[in-house]
Image (tube, rainbow, N blue to C red; front, top):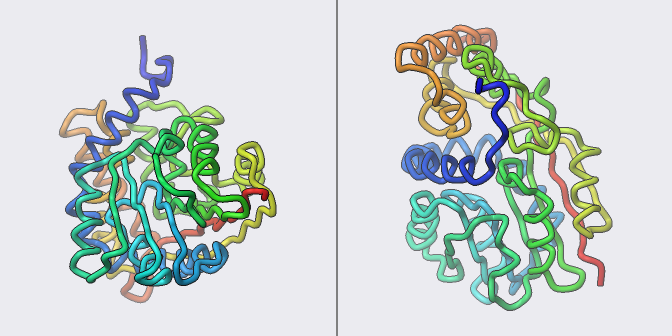
Length: 290
């Protein structure tokens, strides 16, 4: 059976995702200053639209190293609470450590599959969020209905996803090169991947199907600013588990040739001695009906 005809295996996909995020955890955490600059505006917009106030209870899905977790914890204050969850125990440990270092006693962490959050035993939350995490869930509907189940009536959901591939060259160019070299078929509709929710209409439909109302989606320009294409390549090689997952079927030399081609292609985004990678995010919010 060829790669192109293999059926998608969600269990194997999640096992690989967990393993790769465990391996990339240290690097992702180390690149936090870049993540804050790159994703900061969309994160702040999401937190604003979720209506967080002092004392709010927040559930963070696929929290990673917890940059947005800490931002939410500061907003809700000592009387509030943030539960950060992730499939990867390795990366979630960084979220806990970062919260402790920041003196934020209102942050708790829990290792849990994002599709199983509906089973968390906790008091209802005022808000639930996922920053660039929902796109990688094989069963996005199950994840969203689980998130809705954890909200109080009137509670708010916030999600950040990549917009369409054509608006995200810094990521879609490497994805395209690897897909061609590894002879990988294009993902089918509904399969997880970086651009699986890049169409605002699809994203809104997913939220409606899960029972959310008052849905708002806004595009946010989020160019990736770095010193060079080589630095962007380093960031993606160290931190983007999805790319390594796609490269897994290639030999070590073949992977090297792919990275070389990616670096050459990324040079197109260098200008005036700096790198500016095209990127656009979608910030989506909705409400659980009372």
